[in-house]
Image 1 (cartoon, rainbow, N blue to C red):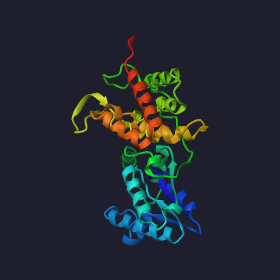
Image 2: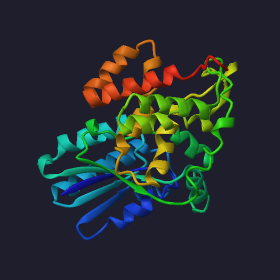
Image 3: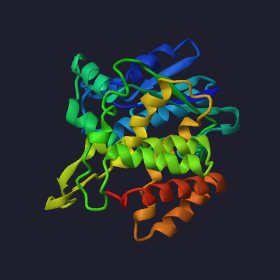
Image 4: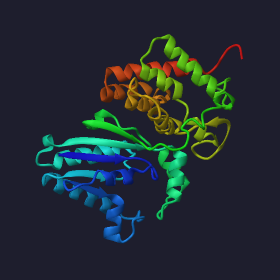
Length: 306
């Protein structure tokens, strides 16, 4: 038996792909379908607790009955994914007989917005953009037997990143452009013979800044410096169309995405405590790769001859 959790932004094609997995021995459980079934409105957001309790109960009943289950919701939040997965494993009669899989459906952000606008039930660009800032890439330690990606091709995944040498970061910690910073960070990773995953993450670690530039603080006060809140999570998603549109045999896409998502953890006041937790969760190899990325990033913000 297989439990498959879908993961993706609205408009990504996640639910369309989930329907392709449905067959006589595979039950598709959709949060939107259940909203419509129980409350008569697939857009209802007032009864999420009841919706997901029902979805959970149906998951357990179907797996215990020997059916495969496809669990269709956005599932972009790591803690929610882990809680769902752990509760399912705890509640099953024989969790050892079930393969637990997550499929991330990836589509360029602009294409998600267009696809959403063409649907009868639309959430809008602002909601999709906000959800992208909450994207936590799946990781093995969450409890998955496998992590897969389904890429939906569309517009050029590089189109927002072709002119980064002219992207002014407008922040006093940098005296170079975003493009120059990414190239120098990648070069240091290459010069130190770091893994292909670290090199790929170094080349793309700040691409989320293209989408997140603001001159206001968290508490909505004006800032002289440009600030880029949640750029690391946006980047963890935005790297996926780029990686999946090319030959990725030399990369562990899951690790690259997680490295980008985690590269700001070294800037916290409790950074070592947080990094120790990362080591416990991801293991030694990932931990040391993350430290390498963090150091490459730090070393290449100010160029003395500028």
